[in-house]
Amino acid sequence: MKTLNIVIFGLSITSSWGNGHATTFRSLAKALSRRGHRIAFFEKDVPWYAGNRDLAEPLFCRTILYRSIDELRHHEETIGQADLVILGSYVADAEKLSEMIKRLNPPCFVFYDIDTPVTLAKLDRGDFEYLHPRMIPEFDMYWSFTGGPILTKLEREYGAKRALPLYCSVDPDLYHPDLGGPCAGKSRRHTISLGYLGTYSDDRQPTLEELLITSARLTPHARFWVAGAQYPQTLQWPDNVEMISHVPPCQHRSFYNSQRFTLNITRRDMIDAGFSPSVRLFEAGACGTPVITDFWTGLDSFFRLGEEILVARTSRDVLDYLEMGDEERLEIAARFREKVLGTHTSGHRALQVEQYMKEASGHTPATNRLDAAV
Image 1 (cartoon, rainbow, N blue to C red):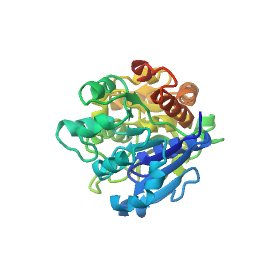
Image 2: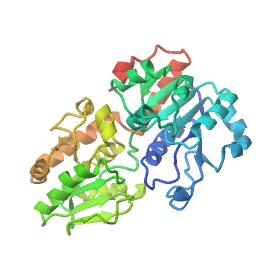
Image 3: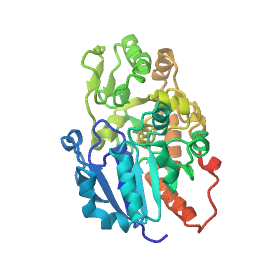
């Protein structure tokens, strides 16, 4: 494929503090750059990210920070010469931004929704924080973090021209087993029985309480981690649960490799929608760490339940898994890692972007959306 000039407007690529967008954009932009494409990433300069930048100047893309839409006048040449302009979810002033981009008439203008179920729930209640329904038909494609039936809903109810899945992914250069760690089959001192990485949210907290906190109280000899921003200081943690306010991406690999199991908990909107794999699944899988997760519709279309991933509904389920022997645990981890590396790396997503662009330009037949959904 010819080299593409790609412009991305995203929530953040320079800071992973309190958001999962940064790692998704980093892995995708890096993979696209590796395939020869030129990337310019535009990020609104806001104080909470400015004070927490863990990748201020990515080597794989040009990063432009701006404070207002007016400042973007100085970059109209870059935007106007793009073959592909991507507008991500949760970008501030999205409607004004979209109007400016449309005025420059890029060949392909795409909305990349990394929060699709949350987005649609907001639209249903009239909350147009970063996407107004009238914007949706104006995009050439609507790339969605969520697959399955929600793609049909986007087209039929909201007028999306082409709703296509573009799931999160993992960069295998950064996420892999550490030699000598528990994933390599050797025990490590202070190995963590179960860890969880996720920003606080009201809808996930009851599941965290049931699956991790209750399990910790019932196994005082075991160690647990909870890592993430914005947890209320009033929360009471058992003595064997260590709370970590933030784990930067450069420490994710060590975080996962220190655990016998890692826990995945899904937002309520994403459970309701189904077909919404978290980037944390792919990160842990690439590290060779087996995942215990809550259940959501479509999970079994990504992974074989009980063979590649473990489902827990109660603390009793979690405790049963924690008693699993290392041989069985490592076999599950190996199968899980093989699936992730064979299907869900950033390289796979970069190829998808190229395929979608070819289809949009009419060079190849359109991908069957239902096949692509899973």
